[in-house]
Amino acid sequence: MTDNNVRRDEVVIERSFDAPVDLVWKMWTDPEHFKAWYGPDGATIPVAKMDVRVGGTRLVCMEMQTPNGPMQMWFTGEYREVVENERLVYTESMSDPDGNVLSPSAMGMPDAHPTTTKVRVELEDLGGRTKMVMTHAGIPSDSPGASGWTMAFEKLSAYVKAHADR
Image 1 (tube, rainbow, N blue to C red):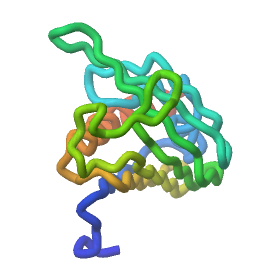
Image 2: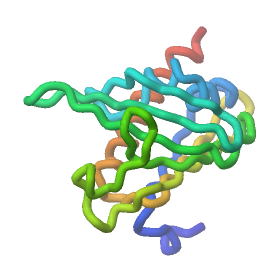
Image 3: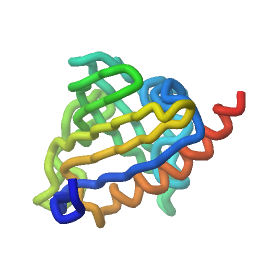
């Protein structure tokens, strides 16, 4: 795909890690690892429930401190493709703590924001190193969600490095 064909309503981020592909896979599929790196700086993930199989569901809570106290955002979705150490595809929607999907407007998002987006993670084994390409379809490349991914992947890089040395 050339840059001219990249959709304006998706974020594509590529990273390489000095770690085996199975370790990077665990970062996406093991709730405890996922909680350690997901979200922008300052965010914590108190809940990450993941039934990583086709048709399985996920429920994630991201918490941020604000001047008015803690704020929580909940996300739910369904796994659409699971190819161990190669590809993970899931949907993502804003939700309540029970996983009931909420409309973007109910969450203060613009009317044009889709209710459901799709995240695709592709991993390539480079002989002890891993190439990762994450595509989040449904969010603009200049959105807060896009910058959140960039920050999260900085945290992921540091977290993978710390665990690759073990």
